[in-house]
Amino acid sequence: MLTDIARIRRFNRAVTTETGALDDSFLGRGRPLGAARVLNAIGQAGEAGREVGGIRDFLGLDSGLLSRLLRGLEGEGLIEVGPHPDDGRKRLARLTAQGQTEFAAYEQLSDDRAAGLLAHHPRPRALLDAMDLVASALGQHRIEIMVEDPQAEDSRYCLEEYYAELGRRFDTGFDVNLSRDPDADSMRAPIGSFFVARSDGLPVGCVGLKGGQAFGEVKRLWVAPAARGLRLATRLMDALEAYARLLNMTVLRLDTNSALPEAVAMYRNAGWAEIDRFNDDPYPDHFFEKVL
Image 1: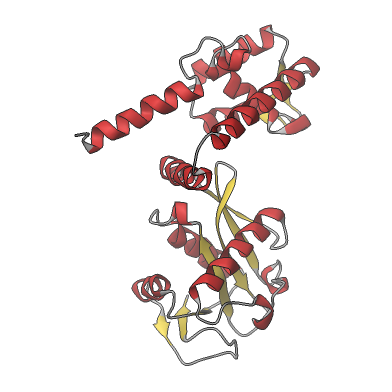
Image 2 (image 1 turned 135 degrees about the vertical axis):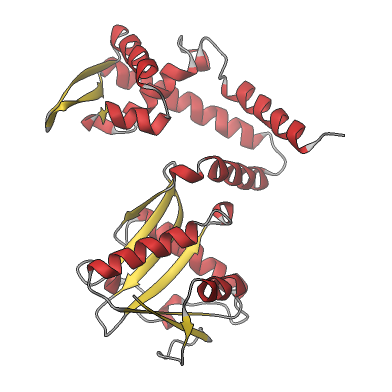
């Protein structure tokens, strides 16, 4: 019988083999995975290139190893490394024309391998959900929270997932058009804000700060199922409260529904005080306030 530790080690071996981490020629392109990952990190930044320190932080590499990998890619004619145009103390790495061709080849091979894995699995959706869960757990300390336009692509993805979940969990379903500010116009600067959390580029959470009234209002707090239990909702709320203080807001309010007991419990445990109804939204039945 496999112990928990043995199961984790089995998983690690499977991932190492599948990703080609020990191959001298990752995806048959003539260089190991480390060099390919650095090339990918630069290529993902586009024509502008990527600051060397940013590559180091993104990949979690020490300076010595990164320098060796960069020199190797330079020697192949795939990248150019030079002074940052805005800060001479920093260095910027860009793909050459040959590097762009190599980057595109890696992208196609990686996409084809991923598509093949899904095509040959009997439950591809369950496989993807499991991968999201593992990736979110392993990368939890690298999750970034950024201010975004609520109509941007990643924002819309989070909001649609949020609406869909409410539709599944509310007995009456959910129609955002029956709520106030369905287009989130009041969640933009200078009166409000909208935050998106990303795990290695994948949007995994959001929350909005609605302004333009006598109090700030927390709206549309959502965390992807794969990222739950990692205190991401708390981090989103902390970011929102800090921003509310910058806008000189002194009182925040929010509403929620008893069909979301985990949300009700979180607000109570975080020091929010229950108050009387303060809006005519048809969905909520719990109302909270917090003095900043």
